[in-house]
Length: 296
Image 1 (cartoon, rainbow, N blue to C red):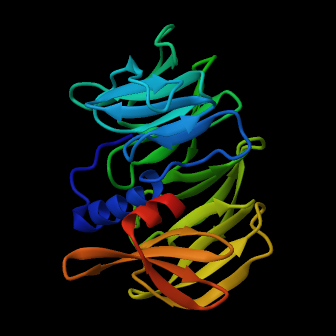
Image 2 (cartoon, rainbow, N blue to C red):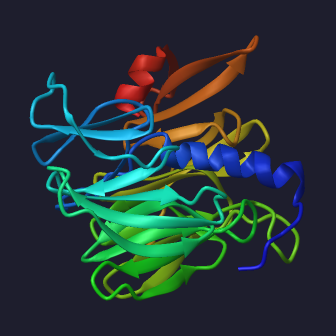
């Protein structure tokens, strides 16, 4: 991975927006024993264990109101992968040039270093003994790496692509930045099958809202800077449907999409206002931040 000196405000701005959509909310590995989640927004329960993060330390407890036990001190931020018994997490080196991937039991015992990854960003997903890791500098160098936790062997699975969501063996991949190394704007999105190692392109206009819901893929395509088209497709990328022909919302501000609702936000007089758009009724309703976090 070659370091880039400067890719301008567009690269940084667009990556921050898309990374926010991806990592603020947990990426759920539905119907799987392991789940990838962020602890930045509060306590999470997985496999009968409650996890939370405070002052750079990860706590685990069998009780929701328990004091918990410190099982790791990664500092900074990042996702964890766990089934409630074993936890995989990352920790950056002092100069952030490298990141280390660790495993530890929820008891705090058997802590092991699994790998050292240059320019590691964070753990993005897990499936069948493999961790999927985002790595690289902000800009076109950021990609996705598959790491086998037993053999410690890895392989790049997505050049300039990062994981946005997971459902069973399927991952949603999107360009880490809109500005590609070759120039121009990249809005390509793919469904990657962890079992087969193959991916299928679903659109070249995806700007936000890329997620799985109830076994389907949902996404927002750009119409212009202030409006998007809401679409869905099957896990194979087929049976594409247009759910909303035109939704008046900033192209980058679409959050979760389901068969019933589209969640998004807007800036109003220096403050963020949150909305839930009812697809059937074709109406948007203002909702609180707490409701947005809970539902979206």
